[in-house]
Amino acid sequence: MDNTARKNFDETQVAVPQQAAPKTVVQVSPSSVDVKVPFSFIERAAIAVGSVLVLCFMIALVSARIALGDSQRTLQTVNSQITNVTSNNNDLKQEIGTLNSSDRLQHFAKTHGLTFNEQAVRNVSK
Image (cartoon, rainbow, N blue to C red; front, top):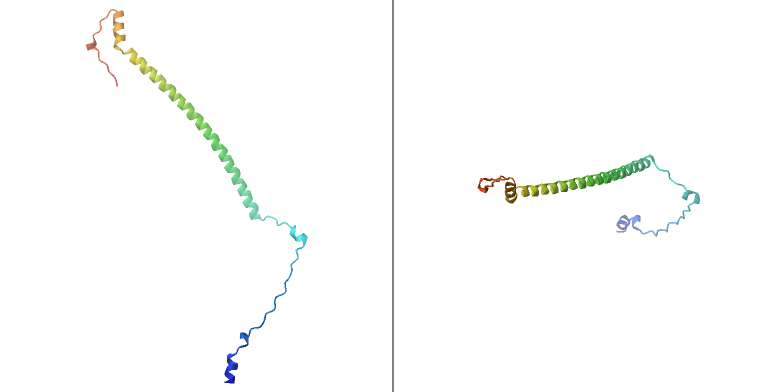
């Protein structure tokens, strides 16, 4: 029985107290803190491409705003022309109505010694 107890007993199962690892203090020298890492080629290229893109977008924005202002000015000019033509058309329609009135035709007939027969008059309109 004594042998079986020794066979089952393993030396790795025995808890060995571990010693605390010694603390190491790292001292930073002042010269290593001031060292600057230079930009890599990829970083420089990314900054250059980004700057060019920002510049292009700024130019596109300014040109778009100028084009928008020109379009608004053109629209305002066309709207004022439409208003003038509409007003002129309304004036002409009123003048046509005045010239076609039966009172005017009767007055014209009387002044020129003519007779006016209303049954013989036909008005054609659209």
